[in-house]
Image 1 (cartoon, helix red, strand yellow):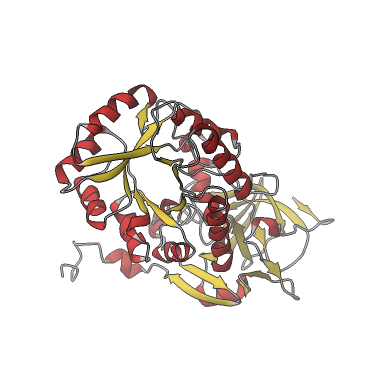
Image 2 (tube, rainbow, N blue to C red):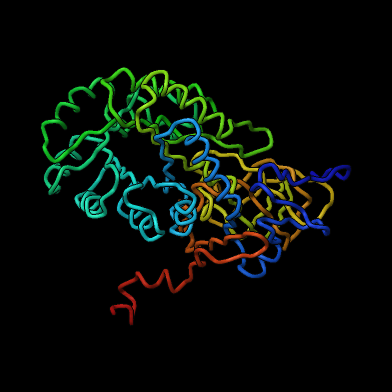
Length: 428
């Protein structure tokens, strides 16, 4: 239904800090007009405000360094596993949380210092462990007794490790993002922690330095972080504590989320109260580091008005699985023009009824060829991009001070064919 009495404004507070409209009403990210970026790089595309990303990283590093002298901010690379992104964050003082050998390789390729990398994984293979040992990472996080066996067998000198604890906490978030409850696949259940600590200490190639806990993702209640600190304080004391990430972000105008400063203040205060001021404190922000600093641009391919108005764009669940997987709400906008508002479903081009980017959202009444932007797509969208219907994964474009550069090129059909081994001429 079209409402001719109103227009649907772009909520710039959901976009990277510094996003603006120029004199002609065009949307600018990092000083670059999205329309110009669409002409240069095509759509769909992931657009990252590099300046805003750097400012967020510095805010994180400063927030913890000013409150706790021995702290390290580790970027959870699973949220945007790109060597280009990791490299920018490393330049701003962040270490890296890598959850597999591939992420470790990307981090090293991006210029991250191995001594500022913590290596995770709930199902580490021998190759994963070998990669971590060869790189000389800061800590390997032990998630299970099989990790103990593998590290003990493969290490040639004592390896600094942390033990991941599942602290029996039910996070207030989507069920798929809860990682600290008793039935989680991650970590050692609280009732088994003391026994596992004793088992690790019997293994001469493991040097147990501390404990790790991560209770969930997209957490908007800071009480949950303090609860994690209290949970780990119930065990014997260690010199190192890693409290993971999980700080939530705003995805729509109706959302509210704590600031980085509020999060740091609450967590550090809890650490000082329950664990002391001399411990090494590690945190692993992912979503809250990158989500707001990236947007996705699309073009409208078709508009179908009937029982509902379906606006189909040239992307979808191939570049954003957050909606299908987690039911995450996004707030898209038709940009660069005004007009009457219309309530629509923004859908993708893939052959799935669940291929939807936003449901029941108000935008400027759309037309074929319009540019659409979806903000707060900097986290996990690139991560989970895929080739559904042989779609080609979008490029990543960095924007800063009015200049753009290609960070990750668009996938090509030749890229897809290179892995095929049964076609003529593909055996070399």
